[in-house]
Figure 1 (spheres, rainbow, N blue to C red):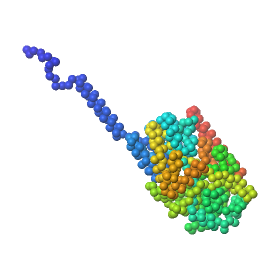
Figure 2 (spheres, rainbow, N blue to C red):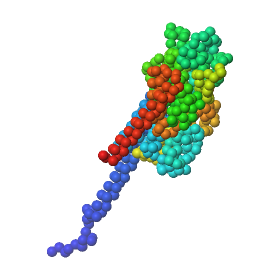
Figure 3 (cartoon, rainbow, N blue to C red):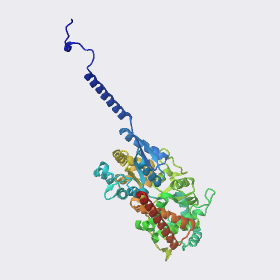
Figure 4 (tube, rainbow, N blue to C red):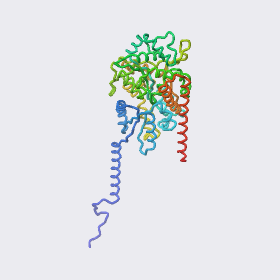
Length: 509
């Protein structure tokens, strides 16, 4: 019988179960770690930036955020919206989605109050702390700061660019009118009397320098051009925006130039506001506004195209549209003017009343214009608020604002860049437009009322303008005042109905 062999000395070719288990666990952890590392390298979440850009500016912007996306291992794309209503629908729809993608949004002045009141904007103090949030806005011009802060001291929006209407015109056609308008004086005087005025002020003359113009100078230019054929066509040669937020800004600019205050604009009740609309009616009654302006509901891009085609000789455009009109050399911005050197730009004219007192305008204001612009925000439902904050911080830096300004005429909000405007724009024509825009915005700009009530009443202003000025062409201040009051009251009633419907839906009745 073979003696038993001691198990402790018997060779074993197999691994004990305990060791085998440990090896399997180790291999599993190694594979899991590798998978995590591979995922970290290959997987990139996809986020969206909402912007109000056309194709050219949107394409340029995507290239500017590509490096940021690469360093942060994310995919960043853009989605354009056409107006503030579409923006707000998109943000509200995003809040209901399970997978949220909107990282940041570039929002217009008209949406700030609504986004703040509906708490769709995330206070940036809650993301990276108050000190870093304040550092973003403290670098900006005071004119852009007021709408950025809400609910005490919380920073909701970071200023991106400020804007205001400027007067643009054909230098050659203005020079022609200055030299030849006197021959048309009797016809112009008769036209002013026909629309409710008493003619031109005593000792009136059309100044060569647009910096000295007022509303009567616009009337003389409009009447002179409307009575003469150009390129085989005799038609009015002046226009401004006729629909949307651009129309609100343009009409607010007329009102501010007449001496209207922000409080007056909020109530739509001031004699100076009626003076502004009296002039609008007078231009329509006399046939001095280009008919396509209201028939086709022109917006700034339409004015830009009309000026390029020689349809109009004078209009109101902001700095970005003037850069596009002239052409900057950036992709998609070749310019369309026959003679870019013919483009003249000035601050807006001073508003004066159509009616005269002892041969002089009975009332008048200063060459003020309405401020608007764009602001960055991180949505409350942003998929990655810290990343959104960091992107906004990058977009608020000197380098981005400077490049954006030179390529697309976006007037910076940073105080240091505004102080160096002569160094920022090396091309002479760009500098001249930027200098005029800076002066109009910082020295002669007036902020629109910052409330949802103004958004409602701004639309009521356009509706009243369409009824009283475009359709009825009334120059009666009383009639215009009644029309303004009725449209403002209608907006209040509609707002109350919306609020009641919202409360009912919330209660679930």
